[in-house]
Image 1: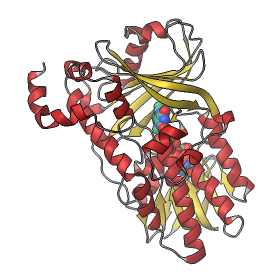
Image 2 (image 1 turned 90 degrees about the vertical axis):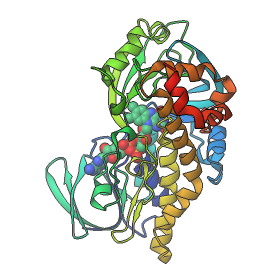
Image 3 (image 1 turned 60 degrees about the horizontal axis):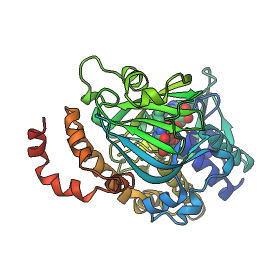
Length: 405
Ligand SMILES: Cc1cc2nc3c(=O)[nH]c(=O)nc-3n(C[C@H](O)[C@H](O)[C@H](O)COP(=O)(O)OP(=O)(O)OC[C@H]3O[C@@H](n4cnc5c(N)ncnc54)[C@H](O)[C@@H]3O)c2cc1C
């Protein structure tokens, strides 16, 4: 079977490409979009947090019409939030204004797929790419029937363990420090007066999130996504992600009180890539483009991958449209996403490196630095900028880390 465009993976990245490219090309070219889940987007493996359109336009000013681009229809917004609070290991709380919302991400994902179908794309669920040979991709449908596809262009949007990235030689060998292992509960029946549904909370410390952070992201007045992340090289003793999450919910002095008597309604786990994005995301020979987690297009300081997937997905769609119509180079995709997002990725990665220097080994260091940070410093951090205080001490950090026990 020949197709013009094969989209592999229908998470935020692949579903965005589909929803943007299908209306551009209508039925002039054929699209096949596949995902190995029976219902792509479900279960929702995500904290579902999105900065508001205003915050996004400040974060990525080079994205054209950013406010409009990042505006979600109300039906996909679960709840609005106004600020973010950072909790240090020893209980200092630093709160800063930051507008955002949590999404009904699964429903939004389905909506994007429906747009694609409405404009003539064929969508296969429970369909998994299993091999690729001589320009032919083999897809197993419903774990059994094998179908051979000859695509003109391939979009690799198959997430953090992307097969497409490996097959096309675009995947980079990455150190384990560039991945966060995460686990999250959707918690319901939250009744504590401590719970503030307008506040996104981030918790630091080796008991709760070694090498990363734990979070409470409000979903409603009485429910929240409660999760944590760990990085393997930063683990000590018998710590693991389940233990870290249990510590947060049962033993953290504040989080445990906030979540007292709440119930777990759903649990998910996953891996978030937090290294710099791949620089090579196009294989001109095989006409393959990587989009989203498959290209590590994630804001590495916080593990936010929805906004970059949306931006890269829209750019990929435009590039494919131009390529099919006037043979413009597919490498335009790479030039354009870098133009729109590279600065933000660089700032976020620099922050992550600061965090690594601060958090490696012991909590007392994170505490020492957080004691010196104010709300306006944290505001810089959530906008992917390094506060001047951190920049100032950067040259002496090794020495400081040596004396802070
Ligand atoms: C617990 C958790 C919390 C998070 N919280 C947030 C947050 O609050 N905000 C935020 O912005 N980001 C968050 N992220 C990151 C964000 O979810 C990802 O960056 C985003 O989902 C990336 O989208 P994607 O489409 O590239 O990949 P994915 O969402 O992983 O989608 C990949 C798709 O490809 C399919 N697939 C994989 N292999 C194959 C195959 N061989 N054949 C066919 N299909 C295949 C999968 O079924 C999947 O549907 C979080 C991630 C996790 C795990």
